[in-house]
Length: 334
Image 1 (tube, rainbow, N blue to C red):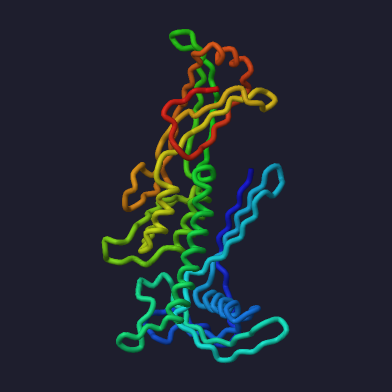
Image 2 (cartoon, helix red, strand yellow):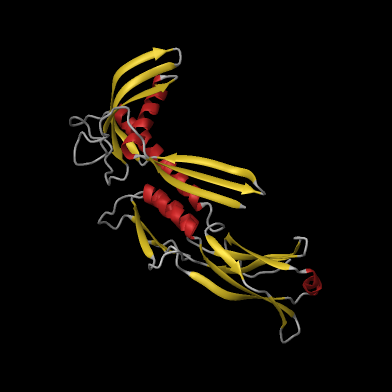
């Protein structure tokens, strides 16, 4: 089974020849972009134009997740996410043709990374611009929704693709009661490619640091196995507790090492959960600490005590170890 996760930044060009202004909260006119939106109706045309403007202003991230089994592609997911939303817009021209509606719009884009929770202010006391507020909210919500999908796509591969597990030479022995024993040396450590993908997903969905206790924090320590440098710690901050909750739900808690004992044909002889451990803690604490340098190097001992298990020892040809989410309180090979 192979899984490929690629996160790449798209460089998008504008319709005009001038330099595209990036979103900034230093100027009220920052991020104004003229775009053409098309659709079968006016609402579709607006959304099409908004999407184009956001991608031009703040860029977008493409995540490609491909998985194959026996050389057959079983999953090919492509997700696009832009961390921005429409702050304001003005329709300059509207035209119709046989394909639908075309709108020329001036769109003001604001980065969702700006630490500002006020989406809209009325022009005067008591004034509420409902249409503008609705557009802002829908656009901002869409940004958060695609961000959540991006996070989930990467986090759903935890822990199966998040760790590398290597097995050493297996020894068969007897204990003091003459029961057969299998000793399996193994090493469990983080997959650096997974940590890279995780860092990219966190980078594009997080918020700037604020000096307040309300922000949820996620710290990821990692080390390039090909580099001589010590590990580095990347810090991410979330104003949105829902995004932080998604991260914690996936990464906090127990994982288990599962064992499969196979015969020469690859058929299962015995299998079961062999060990439970936690890499990132078991409690929902702040910050969430991901220690990507942590490694477990030990010997797993399996004792065969039941008559039916002892009878099957003669068929065992090799051992396979894998990782899964959850906790097993005691293992029982079957």
